[in-house]
Length: 359
Ligand SMILES: *Cc1c(COP(=O)(O)O)cnc(C)c1O
Image (spheres, helix red, strand yellow):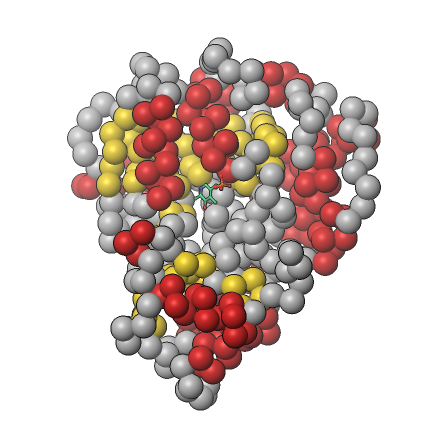
């Protein structure tokens, strides 16, 4: 399957830069040596800097998709003595609920709709919680939560604040220190714009203290933390993706830092939303991240048909939803190696599709 001719606006995998693609084409090096340990150290340092992690924080590198980061976090940090408040605003929030179920972690399924939880104090169900869990950007619908408000809420109640930042890191602001975040879960194939297969769990000292002995070999954080001291992982890491991550972190720095990267994503998201104002499409939520725009057709067209037609006629890949939302919404990612010019291809395709003239 050759994908080079396509224009990619799916929320993972996203468009990668040539620099990153080139690393992927090289022979994978041996990794049980100091040279590779230095790569791990550089990735850890770069990630900790990027999220403004408190002194003494650590990163766990898992060779797995993002869900493994979510599950491993719950397994290693929570137990039957906890009570987690799990924000559930869609498919990914629901996945955390399922994970808590599977691992016997007591939890409250906090269903949310049409709010970014800036007023979490009023909305949260009353209860004695030990932890607050959220997918900062609920990617299934393109909804961004207010991490400032949630962090303040967690701090006031001394909750372990676990944030899945997989689809907003690098495009939307996150600050572990000012937002009192104890755990950040990241994954390679979204905003980081790398191939899928590498997941990172960033643990602040408060979370490190909670790491417990668990009934799992592969997902045992203690093992990763111990091996990490010498820049290694217990089992074979996603070596090439680690090399790409090191390069990507340098690329972000070279381009002016993560703040600049967020600004760029914001510019492209706002440009896209302004340019399509003339089309029979409306924004699905008022709490959109820079990472993505979710759209609803207003002329009765099926969202799924639009997705399929864009692919067939213009080689433009946007993202459909399943289930009840199949005909109602589709999603456009702004993550990855995006420019206004690249985004223009999608905008022009949409105008052509509707037989309308872009002004
Ligand atoms: C993509 C994504 C994940 C991870 O999904 P995987 O398919 O396991 O990589 C987790 N959380 C959010 C919010 C995501 O967008």
